[in-house]
Length: 262
Image 1 (cartoon, rainbow, N blue to C red):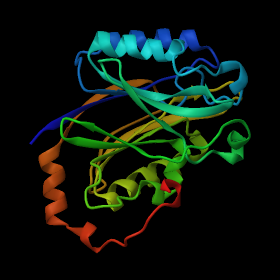
Image 2: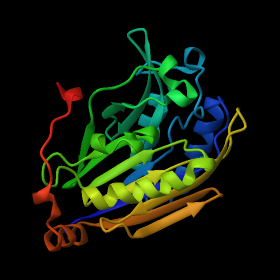
Image 3: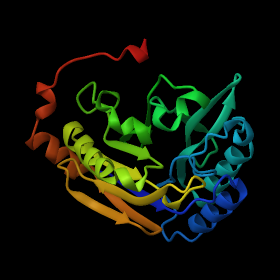
């Protein structure tokens, strides 16, 4: 059975300074010893979690997308994280899934964080993105989506194998972050990868990181808090399949549909 290489980059972000963030992440990626697999950056990795969308947004062929194309190709990696995108007179918190051949998919954040007025500046997405890599399927989501389990729920038996959350999740709610990541792994019988930032942002909000990789039984394979870190881990498909066969809970799940797909 195949393995899947995941690299998480937990980092401080330079507030609303796109070039500084892109230069920083490129330096980190260029230093990776394992130049293959998937490299995951935090939510709004080029700006921090900013509501200044009108000043910071780019088009889908803008500088940050071009940077992702170049870095992905040069390092032979799949590169993902979310950025601020302007399209059809709307702004989106958009996760980009960039392949080394410079083609890409995207996911627009479904659940906007009204507590920080995100819903006043950004438009919500209505479609999930499940990407395929060498026989693996990855469900890609953003930060606040984590609080809404139906959006992540396996709709069919083994619809996906890995659930990814990129985030700017504040330290004062890190217990919820860690608990919900673990819950999503257990209830969906999948690996879960959560990549968060560290440091303080321009609003003096503190982030502890707590990036995690969790197996389908809820066991923590990786966890790092309160410091920058780069970590690479191989996920094993045979272990995933063995757990699903030993505990075939999915066959007892409730059927449902999501109106957002209509």
